[in-house]
Length: 390
Image (cartoon, rainbow, N blue to C red):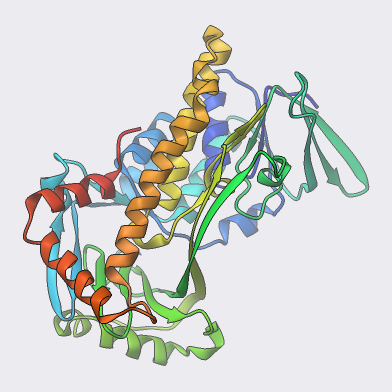
């Protein structure tokens, strides 16, 4: 096989880039290790920056998002029982976010690739990039007993933290930064009406909690738990009981509980790999960086990578202009580190750290008090939450 751009990874990042390039006449092949059903079964966050939503519309994939997505112009922070609202619309200059499940977004992208007869190859095993420093890189994968070769101009690694792409960069070139937090999020998805029309982030001495939603009939709730906990340690009844303890009384009284559809624990970590380009290989999304989910930056950081890559590849193929490709890593990383800073700040602000000193806790409280006493602080929060410009 031969293509212009071979994309490793059939999640939202790889599919979105493939769709955008296809609309500009640039040929792509997407390789995904798992089945489509597996990819669509992954439950992930769904708070989209306004810039990500605009990119979905440009990819001709935004119709259902605009119809079914929830426009949120603010969110709440609960601090030991007191509920305060952050007005995103007011403090970001009129912007907002769209709450739309990642599973639904991925479904829309798959349907768009099907409509255009895009090449998305599932169950591609043993994917491996080759000759990345040559003018003729290629990617191989195994289909049963057959080894298939795809010749291409560029390889895009959008295959996640555990994928092969980042591992293809020599160790003496790659630099990795990592911070692992001493807790995780126990998340429950339930077919119940959300407790609030906007997200509620709760800080409590027992640990952090978050009330989120996927739609008016589908809710997503999280509580901070020790890394030593497992899903089996938490019955539905125990989860709902602990969640109520951490919410303000007025919110807990409105909470509608029900059986969990999905329950999982996600450890919190921050991770960045540099550079995001190695010759003809470009990393995007979780292959290059991970943030704690506190500030809803994970999927959105991936979207900014795709924005830069999309425009850089269009400039290369349509105008012979390689400045975007040459500057991709530096430009993407500059925004990635800003997302890292924001996610670290929100995580530090709202979680209970097991080894924190009285001094740390007092600073945490002072930071929250300052946030709601300062319009400048709320503008900074709103600007980051709705998404910094690409």
